[in-house]
Length: 168
Image (tube, rainbow, N blue to C red):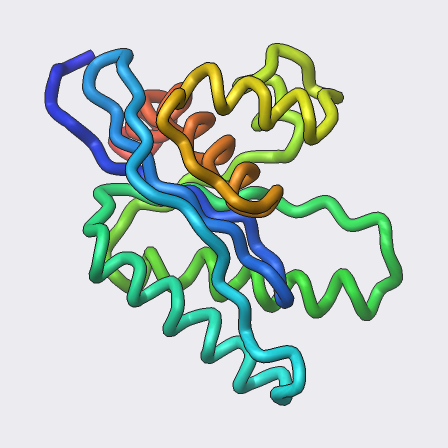
C-alpha cells in the first residue's frame, strides 16, 4: 500500500440521526479527524428531512474534503414502513457523496463488526471499545458517530478490494 494519505468519510444512515466519522489512512496507520451526527428536523415532512440530510452530508464533504466514502448496508428488523423510510435516508447517504465525485463503498453491519472487533456479532460496546483502541484521539459523543467511524475503518481495511473491482 502506498504512503499517500486517503481521507475517508464513514456514514451510518438514519432518518433521525445519521452518524458520520472521518479518518485518514496513511499506509496502515489510521488517524481520527472528526465525527458527529446529522439530525434532520423530526417535525418536518419527509422531503424536507431528506433534503436536510443531503445538505448536512454535502456540507461535511465541503468542509472536510474526503477522498472516499463508505455507507453501512442497513439491516432493519422493523416493519415495512420503517424499512422503507430508512431506505430513503440510506439512498441520500449513498447518492450525496457520489454526486460530489467520491467513490462510495458499502459494507454490511456484520462486515463492519468483523473488521473492527474480529467478530461479526459484536455488540455496540465492543465496537466502541475497539474504536478507542484503533483511534485513540477519537472523540465521538454518540453511538451513531462511533458506528460511522467503524464504517470508515472497515473501508480503510477493504478499499483495496473496492479499487480492484472498480478497475476490473
